[in-house]
Image (tube, rainbow over all chains, first blue to last red; front, side, top):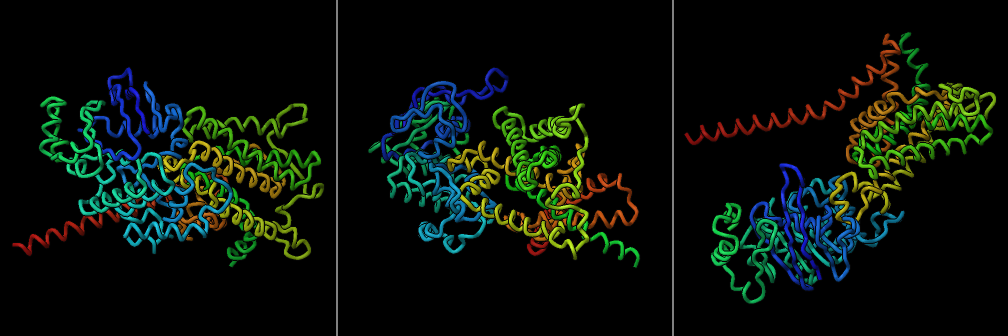
Length: 265
Length: 325
């Protein structure tokens, strides 16, 4: 499905600030895989997702989805196959546009935008149904501007927007990190539902080990721009936070156990 | 009494100028508010539209067609700025300044077309010889030349432009443009080509300014190379005054209509200070200060509000401490 073949990325190359974020990373996802991604600060988790989404061009290697090489494709062209939710709740929606306008933008992902009305009357009913499923009462506020919503409401809306046109790949980049624990749990639950219903191939970055263990069918751990652990199937189901920590320190070396991972545990 | 009388006399002129500059302000609104780009091309575009319109009319082109070409000329200027920005990686504000500077020379050439010198700083056109769309000559004439009165002509024209802009920004295409201005990373994640949207927005904006330039040149009976100097600031003033009066911040229709309202108010205030004795040469200083003030007010308001919140919170925690003690 998704194939990352030996991809690498260095930011600010040739300067004192040079930072190798991805070093020869390879990863293959199968259809319907729900993969959680963990790792310390600067391990390259977000960089990997941004490389897949096309936020920047990679220095080496190749990326393909369903056999189609997308390494040189621009970000907005890849959007037809990729749905994304960001860490910052501000980043996923247009604050000055209404909820229904935001949804309508998402409903046209991967299609030519014409001079037809931006929101069609016929769409409103289906938007309303989709919003009702979030259970946040947003279906009665379709003409409210997205900028007036809370962080959790925005992430739920962004999640809906990312899946409105079924993506081949869903990228969730620490999308609950900026939310309070209760809201985070609710948004995670919604993510599970949406991924499950659409059988979406998903990469979910999280800093919370328990979430990484409890969600998805496969878990990868990153360190210094590489994948150091890849656990799936029955083995993943038996994982505990303690056993994961132990395996991580073995894989990455004891001193690599940075505080971010511990806090997440 | 005399003051009121003279103000009353100048009202038609205020309306006429205000309505034309309202179209220009809509152009500024498209870039500054919708696209979130500060575009300084417009100072050159206004004169470009004026020059093209007058030159074509003098050469026998139908005046409506010439006005349309003024708009197309403006769009061309916007395209150049857009390509400087998106294809050459030049920051938008600098890209606009470059095009504006280039337009100064181009405007001299356009107005000097066919002359022996090849360049010319002004180009006059007389409403007696040419069938212009509007002229300031009839601005006080609500009798015999009622249908030639620029106010009467500009009102439906403004309504039409407002309707077209509102419609466009409600279409899929226009929504993509608004999304680009509201949140570029979100727009790209939803498959919107933000570079293309930025170019289209700049073209639309400068098209409006070119149109306003063409109409303004007819209104005042000439185009000049200086007619657009400081236009961006007048446009901004109109946008901001309109937003404050119509509470239209972030609202599309109120924002667009606010451009015309703000522009008329701007010229009204200008008339008042002129009648109060301000010299015409000091107008630009006055305008700059007004815009600076209006831009500063929301910032000061925000600071004051957060200071109030802080002191309220401080007060509350003090009370809590007292209660505990």
